Image (cartoon, rainbow, N blue to C red; front, side, top):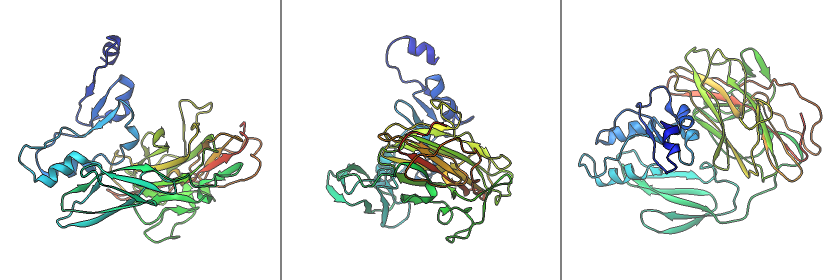
Length: 380
């Protein structure tokens, strides 16, 4: 069908609907889909809106130009919800208040993947009001309501960019990080909710001295300043997770564009190498002129269970190698180490520190470590 529609030579929306069965977000783009249903049918109620919204968590990397996740139709105006609830339904995704009372909802430009600027301009899309911020974004939001901003970079890019050499993501300064269970850990597994409570990063028996430990849903954001052209990483679920049903998905996002999304990784699996269709090697990601790199970890949706994994640059080792004037990263989600000045020579071992396991049922933990190489290109 996709081939037939393309053969007409006319722009036609091709919407796929199997109600989210068999993960249509993975094959939809390959068959020419413009959008793919990710859920069952919506009904005209606030509870249904929130349920379908929650089912979108982890699907962000699959959306792209002319390819969209579809959580079913709008119910606006059909009478089953309040005015504020219909505005919220129409405005997803935004600063959303699920509670029964007015609340202050906060985030930051870095958490939205827009870090790296000294200042930002905000435009409220419902009122037209404008404001500025150095990165913090918050608003007083009514019950079951939203505040929706368009965020623009207005200042100069923050620096400095990483120096020439190979850098472990665990050793870099982060623009922002978020984690589903405690903080993202550097060079240890996720552990529990306190900082520094993890253990040696281990994936299927392989240990790593460097790396990141994280729990889905999580993300780590780093500033590359367009200095790193290569990134590689090993990813996997840390051995601290014992539930066989645990599963996670790892992603690499550069300046808002998806560079890599792994298949669902399950507990018994050993370290997996981040791969890219454009890479000269199966584990190579080659970002183009990127200012910022983001490494999200999402629940695998394969089953429930406690999973601690190592996403790219969280719980495992990632490497990025760069050229003198370009940027790029190689990411390995196992151990994470960094080198500066001259780029490394020779070929390093492919084993990197393992990632942490995911958390129970609704919460999954993941770990990865990342290396970034900047400066002259390392020809491995």
